[in-house]
Length: 323
Ligand code: UDP
Image (tube, rainbow, N blue to C red; front, side, top):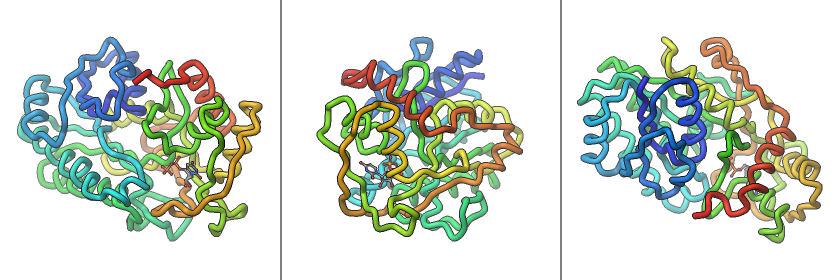
């Protein structure tokens, strides 16, 4: 298939693009290169530099490339930033996503795999979180993804668009020479590894007064190569709808810190700071639906293995992709 990958210069999009190519698909990346990295894009992929907020740009890209399917990764994805700049999130993630969907419908592209998020659930009533749990986001990031999920679901019902929404839990790790390089970095594992590399003095635990066994937030960390494989399965599944992508096991910030210390052999000093606005205490996936319907099984589930893959990448790329 020919797949248009929006956000294909980003972390998960670039890993998935490379896997698509390995599996014999062809790839056009559509990316504004604001947060992504040209160097992350597989050399076998075509690149169109453009911004989804520009309706004409994405319309032209779809008209010219006529893809069989779209994988839509391009988005802002930081909980904390979304609390400070909600308009950025609704503009880029919702309005940009709607421009993409409208262009697809106009040009007869009938299939989309959407990068969605566990942040659409907000504070879950029950754990682990199933796909039919109430969706009540606690931050504009989750709300923006939920709004796009809902709009696409109406396009599915009314226009027959085939939509698979993949609700990622915490993406992490590195694969095939591609890793996490955000500027500024806000994600837990890269920050811990930057301390281990001597690039930061210490890490900060964002709150240890949550209602969890050790007081720090619990997340379900899922390896980026497992996320990429789920996209390949989503590309051809006859099923539509939403799928959680997580391992089903949660680790607290303090447990991740301990694992990072063990993997790196570095003491990684850390202090406890205030809670980060918008953070729910526990997010852990029930991923049975993806297993049963997509036939997806996460392969790299031990937190030490996930951190080891990231550590290898960060040591080889101490400056990330180099700007
Ligand atoms: N976190 C932390 N210190 C940091 C970065 C993150 O304690 O320097 C916590 C954060 O509050 C959350 C968890 O680690 O509970 C995972 O955060 P991350 O930003 O990696 O992913 P998110 O859950 O926002 O997608």
